[in-house]
Length: 78
Image 1 (cartoon, helix red, strand yellow):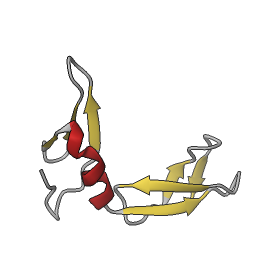
Image 2 (cartoon, rainbow, N blue to C red; image 1 turned 180 degrees about the vertical axis):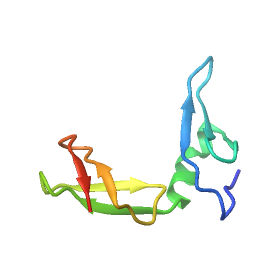
Image 3 (cartoon, helix red, strand yellow; image 1 turned 135 degrees about the horizontal axis):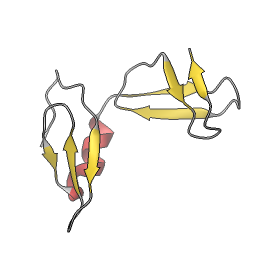
Image 4 (cartoon, helix red, strand yellow; image 1 turned 45 degrees about the vertical axis):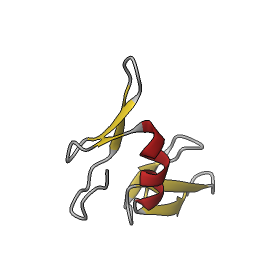
């Protein structure tokens, strides 16, 4: 399953008897075997934390103006 160019949703893991992934915007369901391929095709960007200096890889966005650092947990405004 491929997302449309106009889809701005995020992949959400639904845990049940078997793991399933779906888009919270368009409702597309992604088979677990296809998740890595789909994520690699999504837009992404990198941003440096102004607190700890570490680089954060952010999937699903071509640019961000704020994020929570995955390393130190602090909020960052750019």
